[in-house]
Length: 119
Image (cartoon, rainbow, N blue to C red):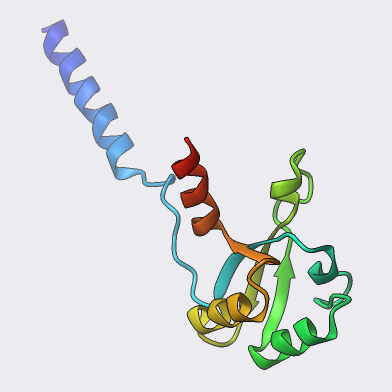
């Protein structure tokens, strides 16, 4: 009888873990995560940087929020991670960032692929 109760408890615990999906990343429309490697493009105040052309690009794609989610991180890479929120298509915006200056911005996905290829 105790084995039967242990089995039921075990299956219930597994079922609970499988039903909770906290580890998956949800897609948020209008948001892109980029790593800004050039200091001239870092937002200083009011979602603006020192580069006027970059500011125009932000205006063109209606970027209304720039967040630094890991400002407290110990690594410089995570400190340079920014989440930009725009009122336009995020794919078009990211492509515009790449054509604007491909050495100043990196997507997280491209960075992780490069890192995995090194390992």
